[in-house]
Length: 212
Image (cartoon, rainbow, N blue to C red; front, side, top):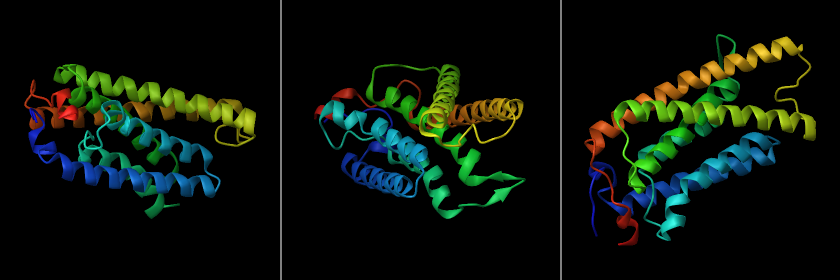
């Protein structure tokens, strides 16, 4: 088995895989709970996170071809936040609302970036990595806004169209995009730090590791 790059993170593939699958099982359970209590949008979002995370093992048909467990742990934090701090607010901002959404969207971008870095021959400079994660977060935030709007118009939910004046909704949505962008920058900086300190720049896990 060839093992290069991110050695400190995936030096024990089996242990990393066990922890990673455990985190994904937790996320799947959280998604099921959210669907049962009527939070269809959040449940579907968590299931999408799980789907993105299982792309490497599915593509290489190897259960040990798993993302570094640290990345999956970060992705689970928004779900943990919804369970542990439900209803808590700081400065009028609800943790089960915008804060967890920003973090969740940013972690999706982080997962995608790490998948590119670990399981493909794509090479990213530190500056481009920050840009890539930030741009991906912004794109994901846009998709999330469209999904909420469609849910409101088709299913009659109240994620965006909740009776507020149109200008208030538009202003809140713009601030959502600003916050998502800031979250993306932070996630990009985290990825740069992770990429530089763990992977030593050009080093990486060869995609052949999934076939060993």
